Length: 99
Image: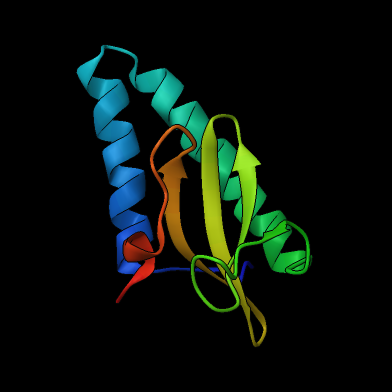
């Protein structure tokens, strides 16, 4: 059983990803991408120290790439907290990680 936790914003990000692929008529691509993201989150849960340090965006934040998307997460006691899941072409700045 995985201990990774998705913030509400990360859940909305996943919904937005699927909505986008649904809107362009490629729902299976969206499902496949979300499956890949979930597999990566499970791996991060086991190895929370991997990924790039993104303290420039928020304290303790790390990121990894899945296809063209970035998973932003924090190691927490017993796993990880997935903070955001954003397309890599997006202008990513600290305001995206404010509560």
